[in-house]
Image (cartoon, rainbow, N blue to C red; front, side, top):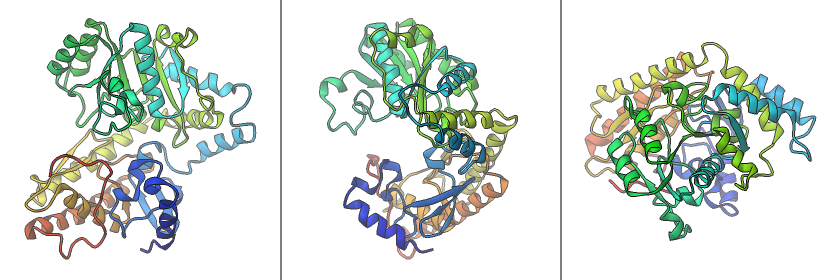
Length: 428
């Protein structure tokens, strides 16, 4: 494959835009440079075509938003109908009413909805509502909740966030109920917010215990389902596990790639927006994204949709584990995640860092015509055929990792550039 146009576009964009991408994880630095496409031209189902005409089987799905497939006719038709009316206008669209009613119908905790644009907007709105309701400031979080100060300030990537803001959010350890209780007992907490599905998912009874503890200590429970929403069940993790939070944030997969997110929850919490809690965005009522969301939900509601996703995901997860065992790579590779959204984690070995190992994986997967970091997303167009192609590529990648480990070197193996993520782990 050649990437002449991608390379030229990259050179141009680096002059005018940091990282040459608007999302960190879409930057060229996250792929093995020289063997990776840089710019997309179009998509079809679960395949994408880059600007140089190369075709790739896509297991990234735009980092999760493409839940039903690229260029999906039913979604396209709904969008085009609304494009011919208006996008954002002086008044609202009736689609806003229809979508809010639909989400209240399918999301267990939803009595009211507020639409915003990004996942970060939705989690931030939920946190603000929780602080207003409880009269408390401290937030306990587990997982990634977006770019806004209250969240990113509690991470290692907190440059530019005032210390006073950073002090108002603390992390707790997922699946460790004792750690959560310790944090709750030591702080006056407004809300406990977590991604309910992390790694292999919650231990039996964990989410129930989180809810009970949060309420016992006077805090609200918020689920961040920006990632998990619409990928595991129509009503999200709260439907899957039967634990109903006070509020929930949805984004990504709601509209098959169109930009929309929402905070949903109890009526008494959301009604605070009428009483001085400011949650307002110019494009929150974007009718085109709402038309896409309604069409997407109609597809997700079809019988067997989630059974299919789970079946293909199980084939992938089991196949990855079998190949880790086959190549005796348990010291450097592990597979984790529920079947619908799982993948590989990397560790260093000998003189090779985890990024060296990941770079070999990235290169070989790309050379097989597949786009994936290491953790896959699925849409309805991924079938057993595509799963087989993924596992064949995984087999080739793992065989090259085995070779690199055996010779304790990347010599003769890595022809593309090393992956160089902006944020790196503090281990080898």
